[in-house]
Amino acid sequence: RLRHEFDLMFEEENCVDMLMQLNGLGLLALIQPALTTIDHRPLTALIAAPEKMFGEFSVPDILSFKQTLGWILYLLNVSGNDMEAIIKRLAFPALLIKAVRGASFLNADFASFRNWKPSQWTVYLDEVPALVVYAVYLVKQESVLRDYLVEWRNIKPYTTGYNLQQRGLEPGPKFKEILTRLRAAWLDGEVQTEEEELIVLNSLLKMDGEK
Picture 1 (tube, helix red, strand yellow):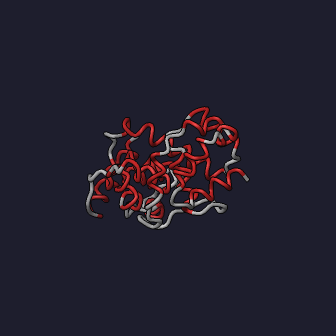
Picture 2: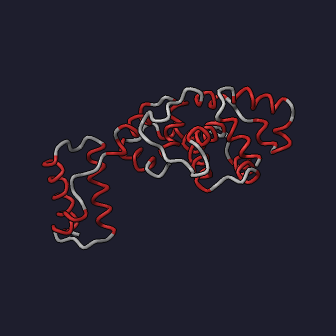
């Protein structure tokens, strides 16, 4: 019930003022002391956030888009014991736990990833809910996050598992390794045509056959 009241606040345009007022009245401290030290600035991005800026985003069944995005932005600068205390006190559902943790990690560690190649970013961000990437983009306005949402996550090689079977490979971990390598080649600009992909594929198969 307590969490649902926060859900409803995230639907309001003045949600930041509402939360600050609750904090000033000492009510957040009564719910969970970790809530009293939250940096509210990321939450201002919620007010004008387009719901379909980069396509559809999946959210937990019990929450709306704005409610889910609100929680992600509200807890963006929270981590460690404070994050876990809030999650436990407000009984977050599993998908929301994954979202707020993922956003916190991405936001805090972003600088250490800055020199990554597109393929490295994509491998990492594929494991993060797209709405999390969107939330961090709203705050940081980093082009790599936009590129992932608009382009990189949709890039796939022409080669499929069926093609590899046709080339004599048995289904198994090697399939994923080869397809991941081909996708990385596209993401990092090593190949730009289907013919160039085939050259890389032949090289990978030759190397595998020589082992």
